[in-house]
Image (cartoon, rainbow, N blue to C red):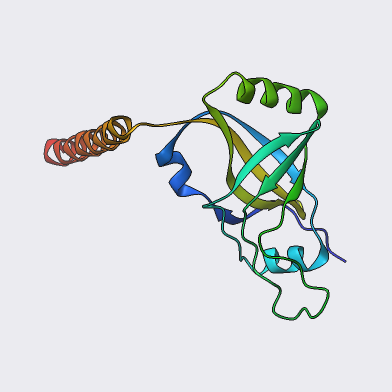
Length: 158
């Protein structure tokens, strides 16, 4: 059997980067059942409502939708169950201190396979207010406009 190499992205949470200011990211393993892995290998998952929390010194991922495996039968999994995250103890302590300090939450950014193992990228994030979201959009548009102007100037200068 050939070993899987590289990274295969299954799902990303694009809305999270708009809704939250990302402070720090961590890579965590996932404890999954067989049908969940098979469903993920088909490229089916939704991170948009997901969040993580720490309880009793262990990290959990909740409200992430992994649809039932189409070929599965009575052994199929629940679509939105709580899944355990695999992190080092010191990472869990750092995350827990940041969240307990107030204003921060843990959100999943990306679900992917790294060398055949299911991983999730989680982030410690702070929610943005409405004017911060508008400011981010305005900065992005200004940057694009400046790049367009530079490209057109470079073309005319040649």
